[in-house]
Image (cartoon, rainbow, N blue to C red; front, side, top):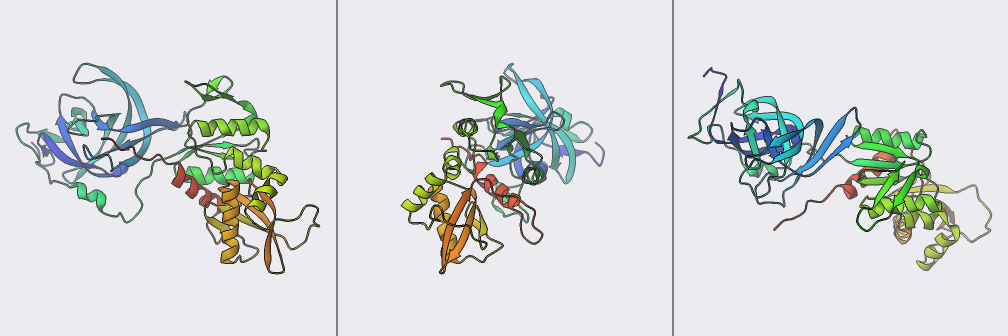
Amino acid sequence: MTAEMIKLGWEEWLALPALGLPAIKAKIDTGARTSALSATHIEPFGSDKTPKVRFTVHPIPGNYDLAIPCSAPLKDRRSVTSSNGEAELRYVIETTLNVGGQSWPIEVTLTDRDGMAYHMLLGRMALVDRCVVVPGESHQQPELSYDLYAQKPAKPGQSRALRLALLTARPTTSSAREIRTEAEARGHTLEAFDPATLTPHVSPTAPATLQNGTALPRFDAVIARMPANRHNLAVLRQFEALGSYTPNSAEAMAAAADPLRTRQVLARHHIPIEEPGAEETQDSVTATLIGKRVRCPQHKLTKPERATLLRAARALGLGFAAFKLRHEDGQMIIQDVSAKPDIRPLKKRKSTAAVLLDLVEKRARPKPKKRR
């Protein structure tokens, strides 16, 4: 054994920092060629040129309250035969292994090892020319602790990347480009679709959204930048039925696109709304609402006015909207509501696209399922 070789027992503590896993107990399995990591919610995403896979890891066996969202470039998909002789087609990633003060890249296959004592197996290909295994001993390297997961990191840990859809017939507009740029800067993938090319496939057993007869994959969130016509709303409603989060639901977009319906809803909630046939004024301003945040660069809204706009958005079911406003005798009056606010870059403030993606990330990321 050379000075650089690491001595390992049959079980060891290690870390996979690129996946946000500072401590995980592994079984050293020289009978297995490739290493394996227990993962759930395994789902490929990304383009053909840059395929990725996202998944959730429960690093502590038996504890499903702690769930670490992970994503990594997809290296391969190959058949792996387990110890019981069953072959399984698994996704393969490459990540960095930390053990004994040293680091190197290893290949890892993803599989659900629920119920197993170790949520990671370290195979012999990860050990070649670097490690010597002593089967009769354990913990030859410094022990770590699951308490590392309770420590607040200096920077936010890696979050699970999202698969996003943008419904628009004009994917090259400045607003669409801003959304795409912000999404990709955060590691998400965004695909633009003209809703006119999509067809809802309604089925009690296999519902889907079709494009040219082919079912689209599931999307974590769908951002609609389209006219609220009957077909487009049916497409958006289908995505919602399949579990996608939408900042503006189909019903909300339909209400916002109907001036009379908008007036009826707001009037019922005692929210000041412009009377029909009123003359347009030059002092109108626009306020943009994203989740619970309201922006109005042209006018400093009071706290009660912001609260009124939040009530209006809740009444209409809108999470992302633009309100055209005017003030008369000290009172704010809503003139118009749009479910397609302009998205422009801002020099001194967080961009609208960035705040929108904050909302999408908060609402669309899958919640870990507790198991008994």
